Length: 183
Ligand SMILES: [Zn+2]
Image (cartoon, rainbow, N blue to C red; front, side, top):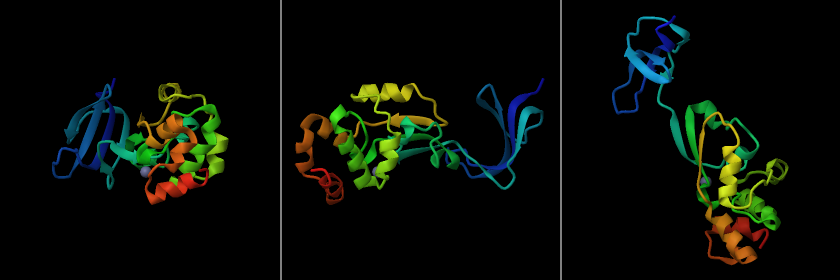
C-alpha cells in the first residue's frame, strides 16, 4: 500500500496562482494534488522532474483542431506541450454546420485562411454531421488525450444560411482570399 498514486520529485513548481517558482515535490492521490513540498512517503509511480517545470495544464484558447479532432485521438502538437484543454472554431473557420453539398466550400475556406492542405481535410473529414449539435455529438463520441471545446464558426454558419452568397459578404482581405477560390 503506497501513500500516494504519483509523486513528481524535484521539479520547479509553478502553481498557477502567481506564487514564485520553487523546487518541490508534488504528490497526487485519487486524481487530486495531495501535497506539495518535501514529500515523504511512497507512490505507485514516481517521476524524477529535476531540471523540469511542473505546472498546471495550459488552456490554449485559439486552435484549429476542428478537422483533426474528427479523425485523430491525439491532438498533437498541443498535447505534447503541456496543453490540457483546447478551444477551436476560432477565426470563424470550421466544419459545422455544413449541408451535404457544401463540404468543399468549408474545406477551401479553411485551406485559404489557415493553410491546412486541402487533401488532408478531404481524406480525413468523415462528415458525419450536418448541424453544429451533430458535430458536437460526433466529437463527444470520440476520445482525446486532452479536453476539447468547440465554438460555432461564423464562416460555416454564413455558408449554411446564405449558400454561395456568403462569399460576397464583407470580409477581411485575408478571409476574402480564402472564400474567393470558390465564390
Ligand atoms: Zn485562428
